[in-house]
Image (cartoon, rainbow, N blue to C red; front, side, top):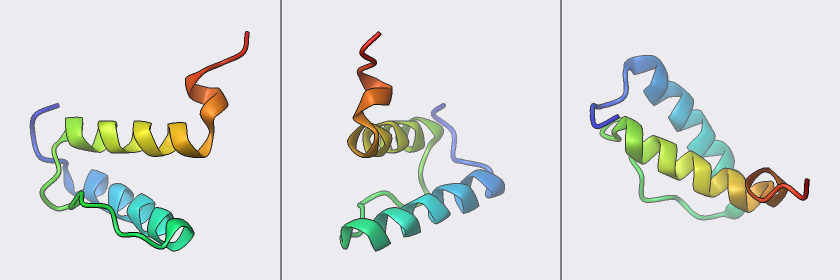
Length: 60
């Protein structure tokens, strides 16, 4: 997870960043071209938790 993302991972992370930017109006500090797998994982987990809190804290 400490390696740079492969090209497809960079594209997918970039698309997610674009969607997040359009919805929040802020540009995140993560760069898809230089992000490691761990950085991408942390970013997606944080954003997913913010958008869908029930996924991070299930009630059952």
